Image (cartoon, rainbow, N blue to C red):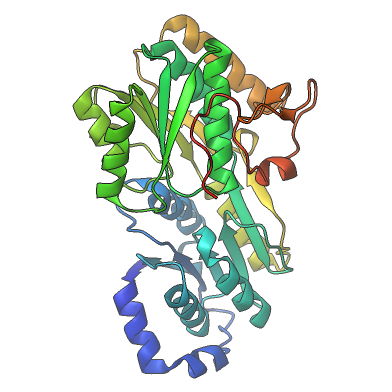
Length: 366
């Protein structure tokens, strides 16, 4: 059973119970009660996007455990004090497994974990770790490198674009790998970026896509948007586009290049089992193709056959660990050395990336 709740409903409940009682409550579920699992996300679940992918990742958990779990999804919860209060209340209501589904939830979710040692917390895209607090993120860059190869084969202008949410390492690495994959096919490729500073702003995302197209970008990367605004705008203009997390092919039948999809179910299943077994241990989870979390789907048939052969060969090497998109030599956008020849960045170094590769023409926000 999934209970879909929104910000207004949850804040009304917080007001009725009071924050003090929410914090003070420590209801321990009886052994025969289901495990309460709460997923909190900053945008609507809808039929596509980040929140949708997280919710879909819980479906196999429900199938595996049936009435032993009760899943509640809290959508449209903005980062900040509201999120902190709402997450606190969900725990006070008896949920012992919390998935904080946005980078900006980190501090509040960590404090909840510290106050409630019997609660296991997963936090999306963060970096803090505690005994009962695990950050998790996807190696999107493994898929965006392949998308870059395809984009280079299709572009006529040699200019690619990306409408991107926030300048955090997870999205910076996605752009960098997209650029490097394209340059592996056409070395002179350039990539322009528009940062919209939002996870969910359809109008702003569409404007950003149109701005990139006006600059001559003829393949657009929708980087962590929870709406199909970019994809739809590109379809209307006859420009190829792709996105992260879940397929948006239904919004662009002709020019949809594909999706770097995430399947969180292997990770969620393992962590829920660990909680139930009493073996949950906070750890940083950076998950990719070898973990069956990242995969590329819905390739456009316009990608040339010889390019698809190279893409499939590269994908196999990424999956088995014999190739990484971040193996040097790699030059930074400012001309300095990013990665020395023969060196491969570690996961820790990739997760801390705060620079663009040569070929990305838009400076990072300061």
